[in-house]
Image 1 (cartoon, helix red, strand yellow):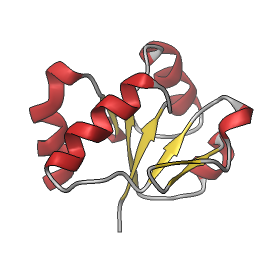
Image 2 (tube, rainbow, N blue to C red; image 1 turned 90 degrees about the vertical axis):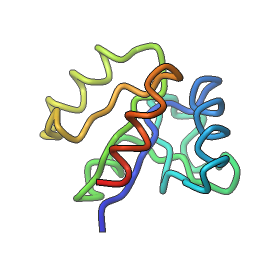
Image 3 (cartoon, one colour; image 1 turned 60 degrees about the horizontal axis):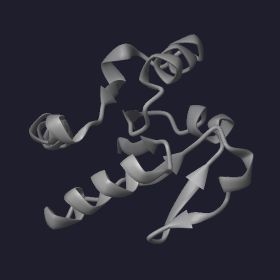
Length: 102
């Protein structure tokens, strides 16, 4: 089964999580480049290091931070298809929910 991952564990991610919770939808994991966050949780959802993300297999990554271009490049360099990556911003909320339902 496809896993849903929020890349970024800051304010934007928490804001988007609150929106998703209104629709009873949750990511499976968070991921962040900040080592100090690895293994911690947000609302009971574990924050992974990037190596763990790459081992998940079938994933959709919602980039929930302001460093979209940098994160996108990092993910693509590690073999994650651009089709598996979504720019997660509040103005794109309907698109995010559509992608989940696919």
